[in-house]
Image 1 (cartoon, rainbow over the protein chains, first blue to last red):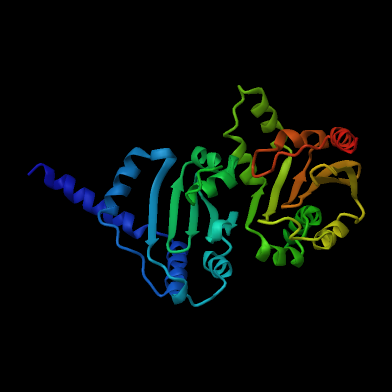
Image 2 (image 1 turned 120 degrees about the vertical axis):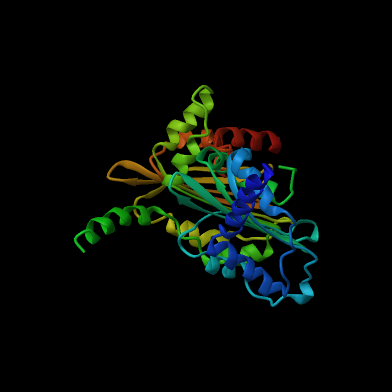
Amino acid sequence: MKSLPVLAAACVLCTASAQAADREFTEVVHVISDEFHTRPMSIPMFGLVNLVTAAVHPAGTRHIDLAVFEHLSSHDREGRDLSQSILNAVGRSWRPFVQVRSRKNGHEETVFVYMRQEGKEWKLLVTAIERDEATVVQLLLNPDALARWMASPERCARHWNGDTTE
Amino acid sequence: MKFAIPVMLAVLPLAAQEIKMPVSLDRLAAKASEVVDVSLDGALLQLASRFLSEKDPDEAHVKRLVGGLKGVYVKSFEFEDRDQYKESDVEELRTQLKAPGWARIVSSRSKRNGDNADIYLKTDAGQISGLAIIVTDPRELTIVNIVGSIRPEDIRDLGGHFGIPKIDINPGKNDKKDKEDNR
């Protein structure tokens, strides 16, 4: 019975987390959905991840919004200029930070990183698009975590895209 | 409205220093195997410098350098094959750097490996207000624009930070290598 208030609080926090995604995050998800005619996969219990993140702040992260697209096919693409569409979706309140587009080994991979300050904290909006999958992540970071990103932006973007050679 | 003119005056010098990336570079992007764009304005740079340690002499030095900067902008292209771009692709950029206030202070050419580096200095009223670096080799093209107060000799120390590549700007060293190769 004692666990009921805790469970209720967790539900409220999870719900709050689910609602915290910025309009721009949602817009970018829509851009990718429209381009590839698909929807992001459902991530079970992701609200709990944010519950832990809010409590523990792993690597200076206080909140995460995540959308993952799998099994993308170039045959389903609309053929829009994704970088321009994402730029339009993100708008002027976010600063472009780093963009990496790689076509090595016949695989096209693109990472867009934007950032925005909110009070003492910073938000990072990362979109990584590979041949058959895409990820959109919005992170709420403390300044130290953001500084780590900025000290070596290219390496961070590559790392985000799974390239560990740098 | 009364704030408009001071704001415009404050913005104009900064805008005048930044290099416009020519359209020809967009065409290069289509040929490149990798394109990297990094944009760090003054506020972001100051934030980034917080991560640099005061205890480490090298990092402390970089931290001091960053204090005088208003922006770092890096664009680099990497190509699978040699000679995928021509000098004419960069010509529009070099033309901008011939404008009043800009002066080329270092030009390094290596016949040995085809690495070339040019460093341009921007001065306003006798004060250094920016730098531009164009580094070319047969498979890579990198353009760096640093806005703010920086001495040319400090570029090497910024290499490896904030997306700025490590640059060997010792022309004498390259000349020596070339001479040795030609023997």
